[in-house]
Amino acid sequence: MIRSRSRTAPALPTTQRLSLARTLAESNDVTVFVDGTAVKLPGEARDAVVDLLQRLAAGDSVTVTSVADSLTTSQAAEAAGISHTYLRNLTDAGVIPVEYRGTHRRIRREAIDAWLAAQKKSDAGTP
Image (cartoon, rainbow, N blue to C red):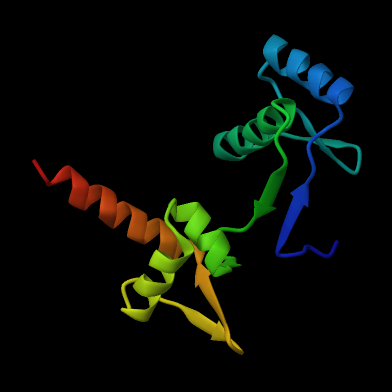
């Protein structure tokens, strides 16, 4: 199986969304089948699958990606909850590490998560 770096699933049609929402409301038990074999997921993986299903049931589109994936500046800014311009300024100042692919900036998700954690820690220290 070839795995792409990320995958976006569009919102489900209303009938499928409502059916999924009803099913999730009735039980939090999720069984995953791979080639006809039931696989018991570890807790964190099960929680991630349930979260994905709940988002689809709520009518959201979802994107599945690996944490180590590189983000565009727009994606990184959205993930950090900041403007694209502010993010570019942070990368120019070396606050958030950036990689260049040609003229395009790419930022690792873990760099955004580390910056957000530092911001939260800094905010917690302020009276």
